[in-house]
Length: 135
Image (tube, rainbow, N blue to C red; front, top):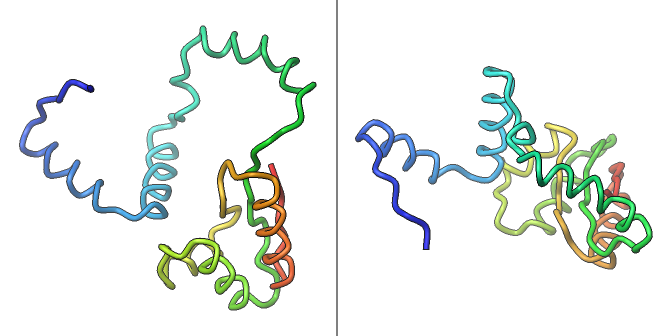
């Protein structure tokens, strides 16, 4: 189990507010903090992990990719249909959050899903008029 960290009252209040944010709001906050302070989550990656990732990259190229991320790159002319499909794919996302997501591109609709699920989501989004990438 993780050791509980003692925070000041001010930081406890801030942590509770962050915990109450939606996933989209957290992503916006992270982007803001990265821009404001010039930092990135990737910069904190340990050197050992980076060298291990570099050495194993040739091995992963030989293997076929099994999980994909569905990225919405363009909502197209009919945003309403794209918003409906995004809400269908992410049922916990409210209407306003889905609208914000579709308007703040690129947006990762699904992350690390199986190939079949990623292709199905891509077909639905493209049928609604969106442009989608599988990564």
